[in-house]
Image 1 (cartoon, rainbow, N blue to C red):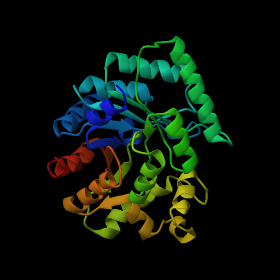
Image 2 (image 1 turned 90 degrees about the horizontal axis):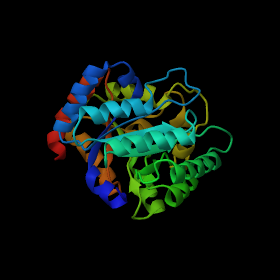
Image 3 (image 1 turned 90 degrees about the vertical axis):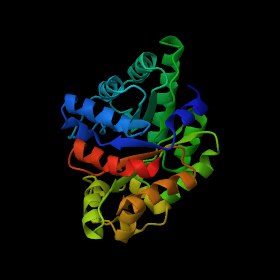
Image 4 (image 1 turned 135 degrees about the vertical axis):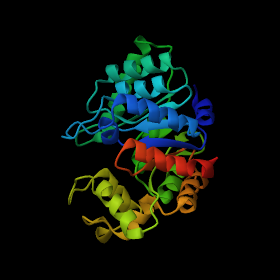
Length: 296
């Protein structure tokens, strides 16, 4: 599919499920819940892949996406993201092309995570190698490619070399900035963490562990981007400020969460990914079920 066809197929809302949640869920249970997500009317299901140096690990990305595709009839499977640091570019292309050939129009490949001191330069070289492989191996198979782009340099690379961007864990103001940087054509698919919890203390506590992501006093692309958005040292301390938590987490009753999701669309997003913070996959889908009728 081309970008416009993909935009139409994605519609307004999809789902993002954490790789650790899927690692801890037996595949038969996954199949049941993926089919349930499709019945609820969500148009895509995405998951991530831990960095190469992560001790946590997860299921292999393309094997996991094959479970999503096999368990559903129309749901688009999204890699958000497939990690360039753990897979040779030839393997990345041939794996994506194989799934795209087996399930036409149902795969979006998100890329990022190139290691090293110059990750964007490394990612550009990686894209070059993927394109060279695609000229020789399964050359007729097309699949949309989006980048895990946060800052202006990454947005320029995405506009030049990909079909759009998939920003992770960013506030609505970043969606507006990304759309302005990309222009009207490329896909913009932001991630939105959420919890259906009306108590502010309980909701924020669920989010703080995700924001810290196990890194203390380390400048990451995420913290650097929060600084670009105007968040300072007090916001980025270990516990994260309520201001930053509230900007990156949609919490409250259904109406409050839906307002945040629709704010991303108003800011220029094509497709918003709902990430319910939950202890297990079934509980996450329970939250998605509570929201589904409000999003139709």
